[in-house]
Length: 463
Ligand SMILES: *Cc1c(COP(=O)(O)O)cnc(C)c1O
Image 1 (cartoon, helix red, strand yellow):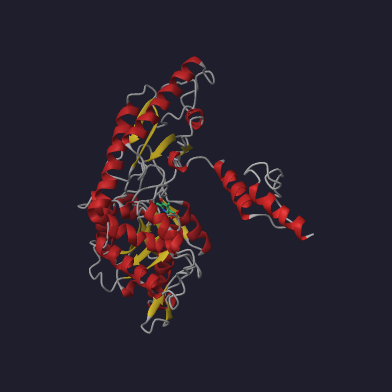
Image 2 (spheres, rainbow, N blue to C red):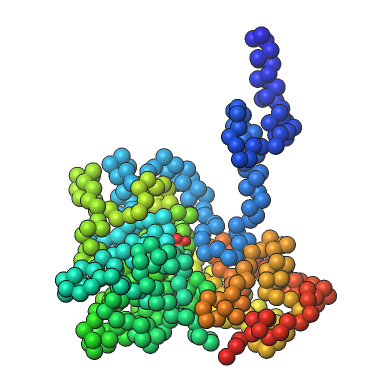
């Protein structure tokens, strides 16, 4: 009996990686397995499934980090047991989070970076929710003090990321989203002012609009709101959705005034896991001053002896991403971030130059003045025997994910294709991509997907 058991163990140990008892079976998919299996085989099989996700570095659709240094991987492993909410048990992780908040406050020109309030989040979506809530609470306080009704709050923004639609729906806020018109694909100060009234809880410009990568004009909007206040007495705060741009502008567009240099900017959100270069799962929300974050949204935790104000939707959350964010801050410094971003911008401009030489395409955004991305559309008034969706499909056969998608209101007719250039993209990889794009165009020359489209179907401008 004992002899047999030993034999079984030995067989298990020496079995080939593929061809063992376990790898010869199909895995249970929707019911838990009845029995256990060796870690080696379980790891192999899960690891192999993940292979089908494709290669994230070739995913040019995402804004999020897909390349990290081995030291970041090591730190993530070091932190696998760290719960960032448990500031008593992991005070040093809490200290590191705190340092990140102050570093960002300084980077975003807070008038008093030492005392700025802020927190880490799971990403910009949570950070936007917190920023939006603070706006709503502050507005309600103001209206109550004036003896006015508080049942019809509204918020003004340009074409926003979905998190703001969620915020508006969850908190019963009328979203006055400025639609695109013709070639104007972002908000303007004039369009903002048209929508302002005393029920406006705030204006949210985006620094790096999801659809095109362009920056909305925060300073112009702020100036216009100053004038609006002079004329009407209504004081409307700004929250900047800096998901991407807040980690780009400070390094490569330092003269752009979009941050706490503008007194009207009361809060900012940013995604650490986008151009903050941290691994997935970290964002940041910061308020200009203590007064801009209503007291009753803050929960005071005094585990650390001192007072630790917390403001977050989540409770337990991993600490590794925050630690990795801090690693990036000390590892790269301002020079390092500038170098990484400048290199990405050069690549975006190179891609824009080369893609503009391809017959069917016209560049909409070439990577200058906004985030590290570029996008294009079909030339107006031309007919092609394929769509941008076909083009995207064709590039997929070489592993590249270059999404084609239509614009939101009122430019649903406009279809564009966009590339995000992130840390990990080299000039050489970009060149290989361009080769594949040219090959795809040659393919459509020989194998037309369809008869030429009408102008409208082809995504031409309708005026
Ligand atoms: C990505 C993005 C968000 C959402 O951020 P997550 O970090 O993915 O939660 C919000 N706003 C803008 C402008 C974005 O680009």
